[in-house]
Each structure stands twice: as C-alpha cells, then as structure tokens.
Amino acid sequence: MPVPIRPGLAALPDYIIPSQPPGAVLLNSNERPLAPPPSVVAAITRAASESHRYPTWYSDELVSRLADRLGVPEPWIAVGCGSVSLCQQLIQAYCAPGDEVLCAWRSFEAYPVFAQVAGVAVRTIPLDAEHRHDLDAMPAALTPATRVVFVCNPNNPTGTAVRSDALLRFLDKIPSDVLVVLDEAYREFVTDPEVPDGVPLALERENVAVLRTFSKAYGLAGVRIGYCVAPPPIAAITTKVGVPFAVSRLAQAAGLAALEHADEVRARCEAVIRERDRLRAALLEAGHDIAESQANFLWLPLDEHSVQFGEHCANNGVMVRVFGNDGVRVTVGLPEENDAFLRAALAFARPLTQRNQ
Ligand SMILES: *Cc1c(COP(=O)(O)O)cnc(C)c1O
Image (tube, rainbow, N blue to C red; front, side, top):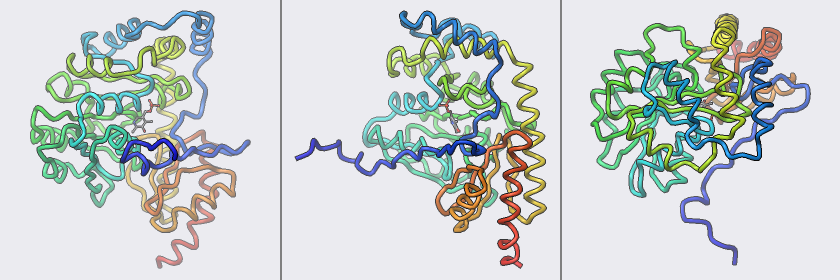
C-alpha cells in the first residue's frame, strides 16, 4: 500500500510548466524580455564566489536599502524567495485548518493552491464584467473564518487594476483582524495615477501587507527574490515561518545591485508600456475585446476559443498562456516579438470576428 498523502492534497492541481520550445517567442510567463544589466550579473557572479558561506538570515543589506528607497523603517520589510513564497508564508502564518482565504477569480493561481496546501478553504469571488476585482462583493463574502484576503493589483491574468476610491472603501469594510494582502507584482507598469501605491496604505493600517517582486520589472525571475512591506508584527512572522536561508546569497546580491539601476528599469518599463498600448490598440482594431491593462501583459477573453488560439499561436512560434475556457494571457515582449504575436493573432481573429458579425 502506498504511503497515503495527507487528505485534501490529492486534488492539488499539477503546476503547468510553460513550454519553451527552442527558438520560440516566449510570451507566456510575464518575464522581462531582456536580461539584467551586466553589473547585476557581475554582482551575482561575485556572490557565487562566496557560495560556501550561508547568506544573511534577514537579507540585512537589501532590507536596509529597500527601507531607504521606500521610506519605511527596516522592521517593516520581509524578504522572500520570490514574492510567491511570501504569499505562502502569509497564509501559513495567519491561517489554521478550518479558516478561509478570500480572493478574486480569476486571479493569481498560487493563492488557492497555497491555501489548499495549508489545509485552508478558499472562497473566490468572480471578477466583474470589466475583469476587475469586485470590491463590493468581496467584503460581503467575508465569514468569521476569513483570515486573509488577497487583492492582486494589477490583477494577474487580466491586467486590470483597482483605483484608490474603490480600494479605500473596501479596506474600510474589512475588520482590522483580517489580513489584506495587496499583491503588487506589476506595480512598476502602472500608468493610471488613480491606481494607488500600496506602501502608504500598509503604513496607515494594521492589517495591510504589500508584496513586490524583482521577477518582473527588474528581470530577475530566475534568481527568486521578492519582498513584503507590512507592519512589523506581520513582517516578523512572515520571515519566521519561512524556510531558513531560502533567500540565497546570489538573490540578495542581485536585488541589491538591481536597485542601483532605477533608471534602466524605468526605461525598460516605459518601453513595455508603449508596446502594451500599441498591442492593445491593434487587437481592439481587429475586433478583440481587451480590457485596459496596467501590467506587462494583456488578457484576451476568448472563452471556448482559448485553447485553439493558444495552439494557433504556438504553431506560429509564439508561446502564450491559456487559462482553460476563460481566456489567454499574452506577455508584452520586444517590438519584434509582439509583431510575431500580432501576425498570429490577426490571422486567427478573422474567422472569429466573421462569426460574430
Ligand atoms: C509573478 C507574480 C508574483 C511573483 O512571483 P515571484 O517570481 O515569486 O516573485 C506574485 N504575484 C503575482 C500576481 C505574480 O504574477
């Protein structure tokens, strides 16, 4: 008889590993299309020469630099092995079996998985008709068991963002003993001035934690580094429940070096934003229904055509991410990569729009 897995885990979904055929255009993981600058690579290489020594436990130097940059005291920062680890640590720290996590759907796929791993129930609230978090319906769905609420802003995979007025109204309705996690993995791509920066909100409230990452705008998805900004008791327990030394020497060095390149990061993000807007305009023109995105990707709500569209793109050498029968997410890449995607998408759009007419 096989060793039984803990009840409730057998139904865990398999992680969908994005396929990366050689030579394909990779627009399926929201990565930055260009490698980090040489000085960041050099810092990682220097750190590699000290690989026989454990890293610092709290990523001390990185915490100190982030605190300066963000204008928050050091005890407000917890560093993690990617911000996805921090999502898991927050659930572990605040939820026990029988408790609940609340999130929107579709939203980041890691939230329900981590809840399941912790033996915690998930309640999901459908996005509204514009593919945004329904911030009126979410507070109404709280139960006495709800311990953590995720708000992914901008939302992955739809790219939509909630604005200050709606978010503040929402926060005012959440009891102060329920943790609200504002996942801002795509903050650097936000252009709408009404979409709030979560850090000042965390500073003002006892129950708000903000997650940021070096994986997207900074181009460090491969080294695994992200951080949480939250009131000191939240930041402290987040670090405490993490795997010791999960944030490697290489990751800490990479994050520190990347922070020295704010101008380069800004310029790269601006290029992505220009391409995002160009791509959206072209898709709208072709008859697609594309929500306004504040991230480095676009959402095509293709419903039952999603799988076919994804296969069509792959056959044309462009990898995109298909989400069942809901839609397809395409990451904004370099202009020539986006052109390759557009050629594929427009060749597919024609039969679709004809059917719709
Ligand atoms: C990419 C992403 C993250 C962070 O990923 P890490 O690589 O673990 O830092 C977090 N939240 C969302 C919504 C994301 O899309």
